[in-house]
Length: 150
Image (cartoon, rainbow, N blue to C red; front, side, top):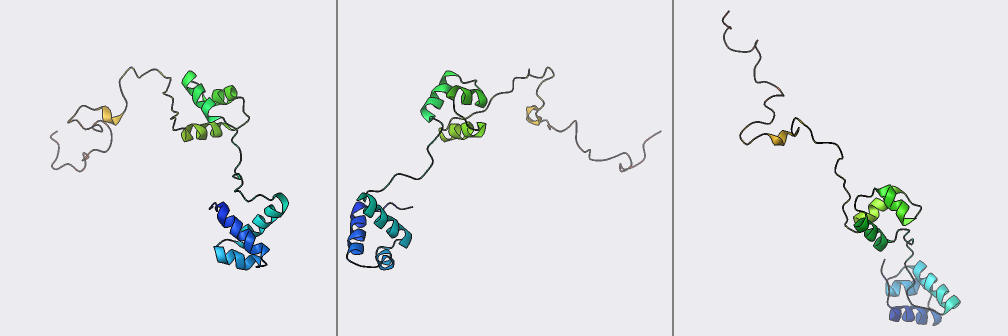
């Protein structure tokens, strides 16, 4: 939503006080009639034409404090961070605040590494197919050419 300058607001009020209807004033300046009515009401009630505050909700989570907590306790879970902040919010809200701060939140698995080695197919040495031991074979005994010697 556009924020109109104080000069335009003054012209809107001047035209309105000069007797122009709300619809004409709105069309003249390219604004909605609702906005013009709200400005006229605000002018009558307060005498103020400066742009108001944003109508967004205030934040529950102090982002600077959250960043400090993450620096101080990098291994804390989202629930622990919420508890240390002392706010009543969902764990998802903490996660979204961390995302807004561009702080990645991913923990490594706490399990022991495999004793038999990596299980990833990418762990095969160069030149060796990672799926050579498993998967579909190219031919079956019934489809091989020729008969097997007995």
